[in-house]
Image (cartoon, rainbow, N blue to C red; front, side, top):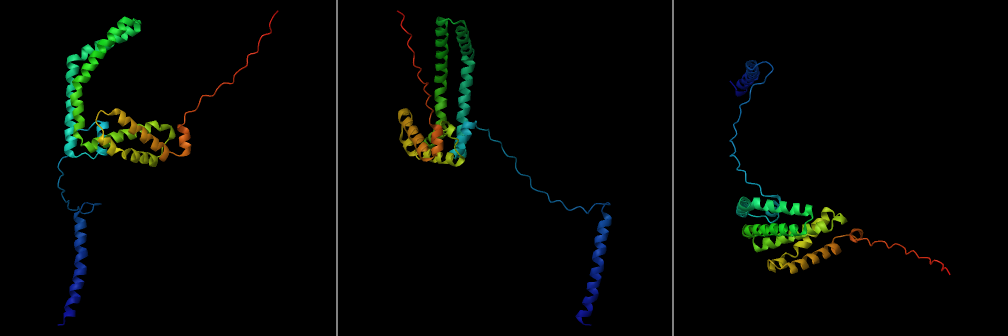
Length: 245
């Protein structure tokens, strides 16, 4: 028998048996439901360890300076040390400081200049003690940064300060970005400065603001930034009274 004679009956048989098998599967399932598909079990993801959130100021620092994971961990540890120092001071001198503040308030209310001076001196002394106790842990926070990162962070703060200065001009997002680029051109100069050279840092801030005013603002915005001169009231000429003889 030829091959074609065998193939025809086989195809007919397959076409009859396949629908029957499908019908039986549907009958086996509850009414109105399709046969359940086999679930593929997904491997569970390992639970993520939540890192302690940095305060907003330092979150900005970590993002802007692209701090490494090691630097972020070191930063968090140093901020925890500051909190511990603050807590220690509060435990030892907190009640004393609150009493000094209360004494100053009461002295001011009583308008007793001698009492105000005495209370204020006591309060100032305690505040200076607190600053001295926190100076070392606070200074340690910035040691997390490299010299280049520390300079860039100063320029970032210079930029945010400039945005406040030009608030009246209502800078666009594009202008804000340009102002940031202007400030960042001074990073090299800032890095060369000594940490306590505030006069030189002030000169850089002034130069940056001038460039933002000249290079970023429009004429209309510059006009908005120009303080209005107070209008002079017209002089009223006094008429002389007739002399009485």
